[in-house]
Amino acid sequence: MSDAAGRPRDGDLADNAIQQKNTRRNMAIAFPNRARSYDETARRIRFLGHDGMFEIRFSMDIDVLTKGPCPTATSERDYLAGFDGLRTRILDVAKRVYGSKRQNSIILKLTDFR
Image 1 (cartoon, rainbow, N blue to C red):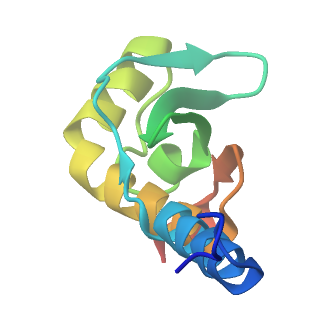
Image 2: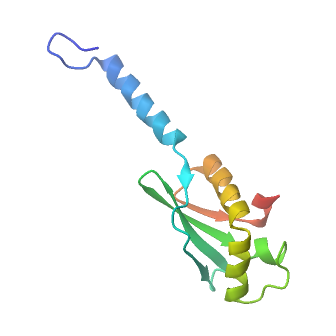
């Protein structure tokens, strides 16, 4: 609704702000880019997600692979192959963790997969 001059009333502005906030909160994280890379210094695999127009940076500790389904992985090639083989599970966990933290940078740890 609006006043006589056609301007929105204060209550309408507040309702609109709440609606925009809820829309942001309900947007789904997506992983349209299959690219991933290995960061040897941090011992993590890095990949990106997108929540609307926002880029979300994810890193996954190598322990997720070496202390789990890929105990013999010892090289970048092994880690990336392990990631690719578990991509669906990893992205499901990334979605869950992102849904609870809503940060622009998230590190996935072994405990997130239990």
